Image 1: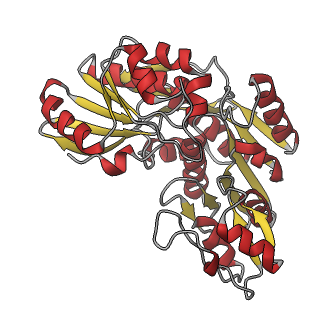
Image 2 (image 1 turned 90 degrees about the vertical axis):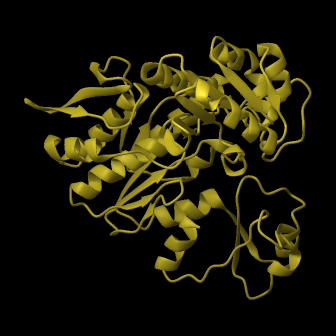
Length: 377
């Protein structure tokens, strides 16, 4: 939807379909008046709309290449990549450039993540899935971190690192996160750090929890400094930043118990989320995890076990996305290994959460799937 709006800005007429919205993907959606059909990485080779486009000889373009075409229309192109934290960092960079008066166009992968500004600055989240970010031509590349993920299209961590190196090499300037950022916790779960331009330093007190957000914010601040934005403006932008959709987002309450939606779906992200929860709630929280894809769960099974062990948690059925079920890589396999409860139905999970909520100060619904849409309180 965001890319469609950007295309419309440059004079294109767009339409689309969604498998989850009737009538779904059907051949009759494609007709000879269409110039280009855009597909994302989840579209199968036998998709009826793709097949019909091929029959009609219509040009077929990947979403990654469309983003590259849009990006190329801007002077300064800031692409933010990383296994974790790229959406948050993209939003933080956007907030800094906006407050700095640079009127950026911001393309983020989250709900309501599009801001249409001028053509001097384009800020985009760059996804490493199927190496799609290598289609981009950034002038500034930002990498938050690199872990082994997307195991259905990368063989090992070294292959992931190689892709990210190629991504950074495409840019005139690149920024990566540092492990030695000095910061301090000023209130449970929330951290502060310094942003300096020469001898001019200011302390940023983040409104969002988690030490991992220090690294995201520090990178965003480096981008701001690169474009000449004053440290005090960076401070104001980052302190005003309150988060984005499904990134430690409070979505409701059950009595006095806070319900938090969290996008964490990789072992490293789960560790960071649990650390944040502990710093705020002690042990009075329940972690509800929905694994995302069977291949990831199977390949990183032991890491998931380590990340979740010692935490009060329950498991919800795997969000399969584009995959067929794989033995040993299912949420129920993970639940059995951890010795925790498993739920296959949203209604049953909702009843359970309402029942146990009084025992906890918070319930964290974690995962990149559809659990948050279907579990009612």
